[in-house]
Image (cartoon, rainbow, N blue to C red):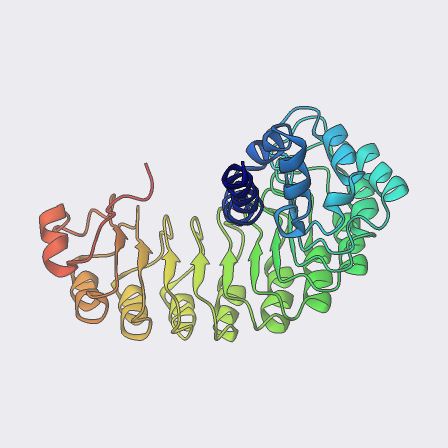
Length: 353
């Protein structure tokens, strides 16, 4: 009996110490839905998981239905009091009233929030942004891709309420104007990443304000913005730490403008797809200056030839892993075999389809 008692005590100790430690490690790697399911397994497991604040730092409602109600329910629970990341990307059933209720009923729930993803939440307007950002003083990452309801007023609320943004995704917010860029430039001079893809109302003047004041930018996405000119493109040279630059569709970019961009010699990724005015001269300038390039797309540029590839092979052959020259009819050595002879590290030959 004594031996059996000792064995039971050892098992209990093992369960409390070893299993608890294992659960702590495993739970941090589980999807949130699985984590919540584990709460239902047993009272002991429920108490164990609830006691780890570090595994309740994320609320992931991506693509879920009734996401607004789910968000309110989650934030009412004590375990989410230190939440740092909320993902509502393409979630359904999220409207301004939900965000206003969060502010009214859970005003202290988002004091630690650092990342808010509202991508594809097309029913959120300036009013919703005002409500939610007013209770997120530590927010650093804000993403609201593909929202045509948001206007300059929404960005005004954002910069007023959240002073520490370093990553801002406004892709597809087609109602934004140069005023939004002025607000961003004046408020976020430590900004590291900016995406204004298809923000078609923004002009050279708006972009210039950002380029002149946000010198810490490392990522700049200007995809599908054909209205900019060399007046703005030349000032991209003011970004010494720039690593990622997407200029797909920059129809007014010239070799001269690209020559100024080449001063960003830390560039690792450069998308020049459909930059139709570019020739060998511009690409050669990039090749001689940006020797850390890993990604380069020249897709659809008919003015480049094998000459620019020869220079690229001399400066970037050990770094380039992605090179798209499809549609570049002036380049004759375009087969995978020929490209691999010049760039042996290539693993991707086609970015656009």
